[in-house]
Length: 198
Length: 198
Image 1 (tube, chains in turn purple, orange):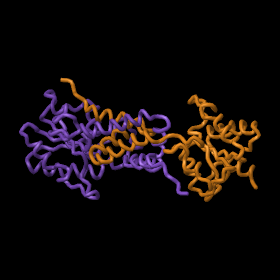
Image 2: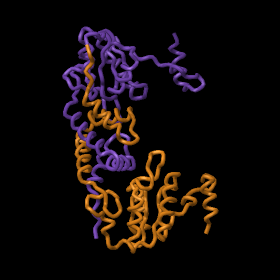
Image 3: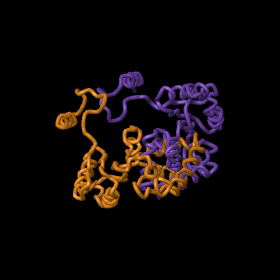
Image 4: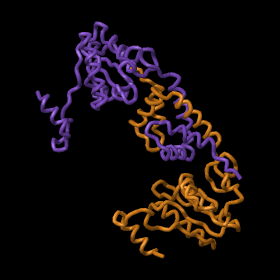
């Protein structure tokens, strides 16, 4: 006698596996949890997914996620339009905003240059960034991509292209993190902090 | 000028946080990933959630998830109805099935006794288990709850109640895991394996 599998449970587990960082066991645990203890949560998540897919688009100026054609930050006349901060993701933008230390505008790459994944400068919208930075108002482009190999490469390529257009490109300072003890900081960071001492 | 937040993105992140093991940062990463790279996946997950909530119910005999009134295992006449294996979750049941070493039927508690969470024997359906085990066919109830403090307590309580009804209750053997080196096995496990040597 063939065993009839629980099709809709299997389908849910497979769908959950498409979430980043979720493997087979986590997906099963999530599915069991939702069905056993949080069916409201499951329906709420279902709706939120459809709503977000329907309503979220990219800001025409900075490319971050927004529901309007232009995002709230780009629309805000109190932001300093002479500084443009380039970040990899909306999460990085959010981290930058939480510091409260930056009053300028953003350009969100929605990725990084990654030859292994076949993502080059043009896939990242380098041309769009150059056009955006050439609006005559922007005086400085602050490259705040991550300090990973791919983020550094991305910053390097962007800096070259911006400078070739006569635009000023700066990079977030590398150095010792606030609150850390030198003994536990990696050597590359200390070496950078020493070379860039001020 | 007030900043209009990206409502549907925020709602999606909040909904994703209801998944077990997903915090604020993971939820944001999942939401960005779905919107940026996998909108099909988002819609598929949305549908799978609704389908599963609509169709999955509990088996009337063993309480596991199923789309039919009685699950495929309980319906299978080739399973040995004299042995009933009690597990905490469908995931544990699946692990037991993967061994291929058990041909009996199951009773899935869908939880464990957990005084801290206010889950007592009656919330777990102890009465339902006793009725199920008293069908005149079941000769042995194998308690295969987890070997955690809560799982052990659950097994203990079930064993007492089953024995009070004159039913035979056994427990999976505790001992040294297959393939492990004694040097790296915890002392409690070795002590148990020694006491229960055969």
